[in-house]
Length: 420
Image 1 (cartoon, one colour):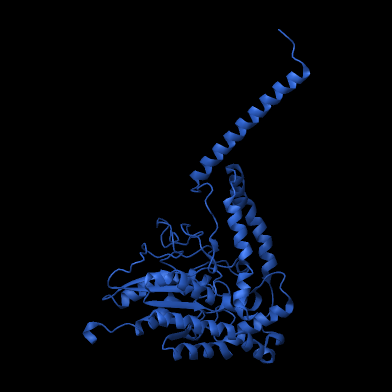
Image 2 (tube, helix red, strand yellow):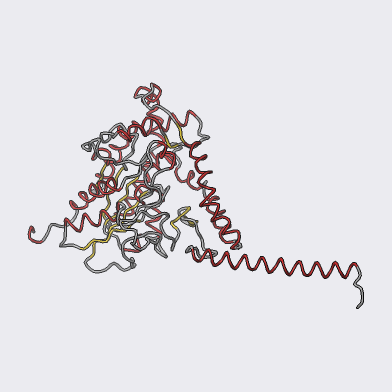
């Protein structure tokens, strides 16, 4: 038997090693694929809740399930975002409206979407994370309320809200998508996102457009092939390591501040009120534009200011709500102190002193309806928990908001035949 040269021995060993490593990697990749499938994760699926849009920066990702859904019953099927339009309901939504149905769309940000607690507020008291199911969220609660009050009619209430959405994005979303679905009533409940991302700067379009790069990066990253081994590793990271990292991030956003200090008082607000009024004119102009579009389509409109924990006109705070209100504010860890002061002053006083009346006047002038939910909840006592953080709702809170909106809807419906 001939002796192999050193080069031949190296080539043989290298080839065997390469084949062995390839087989091991293939086995790992195949095993990872099977584990991911068993976990209900479809390989190479776009897994982010929002996706880039050519019209309004982002939209809810079609076909994705609600994140960490909070259900009435654990056995209930998961709620899935509509495959085309990016909204959800209790039944599939056709473009053609069924005969005899009153179709209502709810628009707005994360509060109306049904999002859970912003994590830093769990330091005061933990509430649910994730997203309320359709049945527990404002849209489902509204449909249930209306159907009970008016059993002679058939309602279809569709949740078309999205986390972080601003009023001008709702208007573009209506033009792009919702107008195709023949809505009878559109309900927008907004306030905090526009305050944070638009009213502070006075340039809501530019403020939101600056974030488009984030969604492009998500799209590019999701489009690239990811080995299943790496996806399995990331799954393990999300489940076992990320909670520890998230706890550290939560501490960075846990901003402790007593909002009763003199620098956050009414006198301090009055010094900057005029600048707030000026920076809000673009928001009010967008409201005018939105109403003109809806009027052109003969669609009824209810515009609401969402309840916010920090406003002075409010419910009677519970012990938990009061601790959240006076010790926590949801701001970024790198926000400049002067911006924090402006945000707090605008949150506490500006809606009550100017924006509510200014919005009401414009809406009523157009023969639409306006509701400031903070004014509607003043009778709620401290034993009723409405807030889980600065603006999101408990399940009973979601039901209460839906009833307030439902009362407005009922006033705009034709009277029952027996009363005609």
